[in-house]
Image 1 (spheres, rainbow, N blue to C red):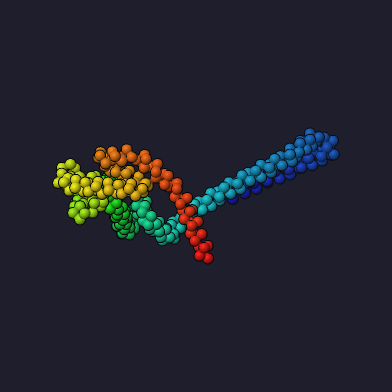
Image 2 (image 1 turned 30 degrees about the horizontal axis):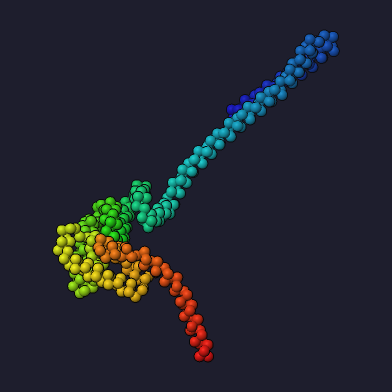
Length: 338
């Protein structure tokens, strides 16, 4: 309002000056026509008129500039007001959106916790439970999830312990004692706080002692029943378990089994040589040298083994020829009968 009033006064002033200049020109002209003078007054009026006319465009440009500046200022003020309203609306929208999506965010968080529990990622699940408690304020639900995490972690650990102990027992059943001791140490390192993993080395030692006693009993039964070959095999197995002091009570029985086994295998060797079964003779002779290396019988076999091997090779080379002759003889007999 004030700016409009100012503009009006400026316009009125220019109009007044223009009118005054025109009046001076008219008066000067009239005097010049009547009295023959008034040239100075006429010139003054013309100069004033031209000056005022020249100032009008400048004044109008200034007024327009002021008007545009005022319009720009007003527009800026309106934009600032609009931005403040938008900011208030945005803040209100964030709050409203948070309230609107609170239920969905909670459901998403619950699904993420369930997924971490299923994947046995206990640490990640615990972090999400803390967020549920602190951000959303669901303390009761968070405590329920923590209890589930603890139960699931315990179940997972029990399952892994069971799998490890099953494998440990399989190694013991395979009589791989070195691997059993190593597996016992590994399980104890992995699950040091579990009562189920205590005393594993004692279990290996107990299984060792039980197997040793079983071998001793079977050896005595085989020796007493005259099962020399089986008794010899059991005696070899017992050699790993028995210390010299533990083997002392079995020495007499073992000596008798060894003597019988040596006599039996010596007899097999002699019969193979007498029957010209050179392949069997070589096989039995090599067994004698391996199992009874320090006996006189083994020394005799060493002296003859090269000859026996040569004859066994000749016999093996002759076998295809003999088979061919036998097949030819059978074919001829079939033709004659036909």
